[in-house]
Amino acid sequence: MSMFETLCVVLTVALAAQLSPGPDMMLIFRHTTTSFRAGVACVLGICLGLTFHVTLSVAGLAVVIKTSPMLFNTIRYVGAAYILYVGIRCLTGKSGLTFDDERRDAAPWGQALRDGLFCNLLNPKVTLFILSVFSQLVAPGTPISIRAFFGFLIVLEAFVVWMLFSKLLDLPAFRRRYENWQNVISRGCGVVLCGLAGLMVVA
Image 1 (tube, rainbow, N blue to C red):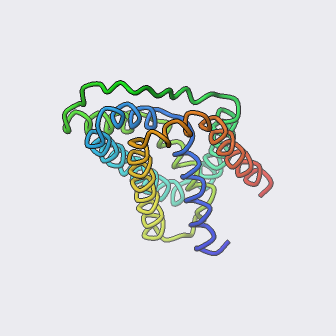
Image 2 (spheres, helix red, strand yellow):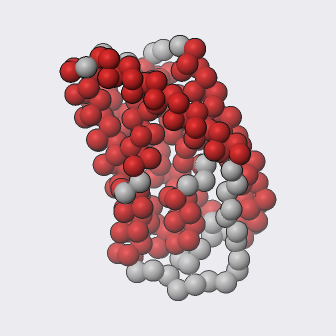
């Protein structure tokens, strides 16, 4: 694949992971339904945590590629299996987000930021997922600067998607439609992730 094609696939996989149910989405939902300002702070915290995971994955793979090609191949196989696992969870699980019109007290901006940061930072599955994507889709010979650029775009995409999600949660019509369609969206993300895992195995 060309670099542009690889970037498109990386961002598509990352988007599927963001739209599938998980701790980050649940936390953004909880804070945004109290106030949009708290939701923004939570999103910023999550993106800071994601930046750490991306940096760790890019730097870690650079070391592994240089020192142990066998370990790198093992990471690739494990990564494909993990992406398949996430896809199956999306296909079989339920989102469980429910909406009500009652507004709770909003958390202070700093607390919402910390909640988002530690929710993402302390979730080892984020590092595992990012590592899986990079080991599958970014060639070992790709310069670290290009891998870092891909990582930056993953964080930027997450910021844009979560900010849009937070803003839309302020709209009652969106909340009702999302509650009705959230499991369909999750299933669609599961199909994308399982399909990618299958391609990885074939490749």
